Image (tube, rainbow, N blue to C red; front, side, top):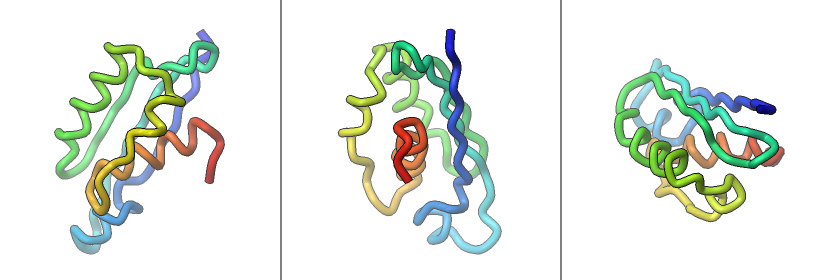
Length: 93
């Protein structure tokens, strides 16, 4: 499997900024580059529990990264980090 990882600092999201100074955490997606599918995800930080469900559905349902890209997260919420990770997976900045 050609594995790729994308990481993002949760404190760098709008939700992190709204939570206040010193909010730290990280989010990471692991993907199979050949199949363009997520195969893993980790989230560390305050309020990340809600992100697990979305990642689990994407992984278990084998939803292609290019399809996930069209699932716009609410803003400004912590789910914005999923969009930032997918941007990294697609090479968008």
